[in-house]
Length: 101
Image (cartoon, rainbow, N blue to C red; front, side, top):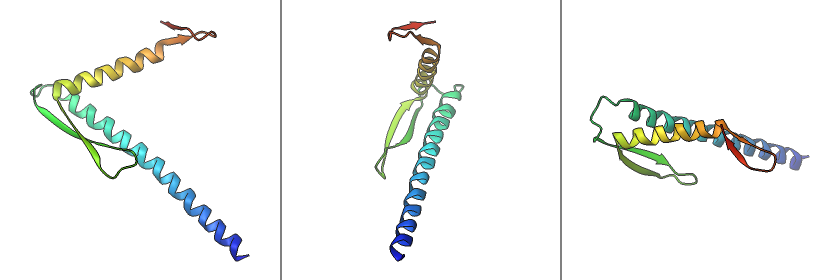
């Protein structure tokens, strides 16, 4: 009886730990997207100003520091937007060929 209770408690603890990790990863991704958006949208400032952002690394407590100019951050944002729009607008036929609309 004690073994079953102990096993149940351990399962509950591990289940809670797994769900916390997913929420944290989602929050980190949202923060990263917000940071890049804020940096890129303030285009009235000097485009040559260097801005550094700390990017988290999965499986590590340490992040990676990425430094780009304001113009480069804007180009990254525009490229990501264009790529996502291209993916949404393409159509795949049954034989695997891709048709861009």
